[in-house]
Amino acid sequence: MGKHPSAYGDTMWKYYEDPYLKEFQTTVDTCSDNQVILADTIFYPTGGGQPHDRGTLSDVPVLDVREQGEKVVHILEAVPFSPGDTVTCRLDWEYRYTIMRMHSALHLIYNVAETLFSISQSAGSNVDAQKSRLDLVYNEIIDGDKRAQLQEAFDSAVDEERPISVWWDGANRFVQIEGFEKMPCGGLHTKNTKEIGHLSKLKRKNVGKGKERVEVFL
Image (cartoon, helix red, strand yellow):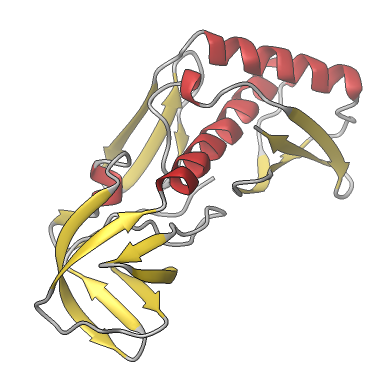
């Protein structure tokens, strides 16, 4: 549930320092063809099942954001900038915030499933603004009754407004929802469970022997 984090030189990317930062000015480091590398950025790159941020660089739409080694590359249709230029990063905040809520929701679903059904392993996940999924290693069927239990426990944890803590231990980054075990994660999260909101729907799919997929809708 999230990619391995990275840093550019001695500076941690702004999207890690403050995931609630919607707009940010920085300078162009290098650019070529349709690619721009900035001195710093609030744009989260695709990775670990979480999609890249949407938005603009000085009103130029950002089409893609990729992590290449220790650099974050912004893909534009055309690059009207030169190295040293000052640019304004502006996020599509509604989209970013939905992704943050969805990512935190998957962690909460996993934590609740672990507590209720002794599930202790994930087989993958994918975060999306419309629908997210979590694949669980489980030899039973998450039927209607179990989905109802999951949703009830999930919504209760949301109402309790449990803090969500994020911290670094060396090069490793962890996320922990109060009352549950910590998990390694390089993604972006809300400050507490209240921000996630209640589930509007929770669906189940069988994706192979010993695996159950839950699809999350907020």
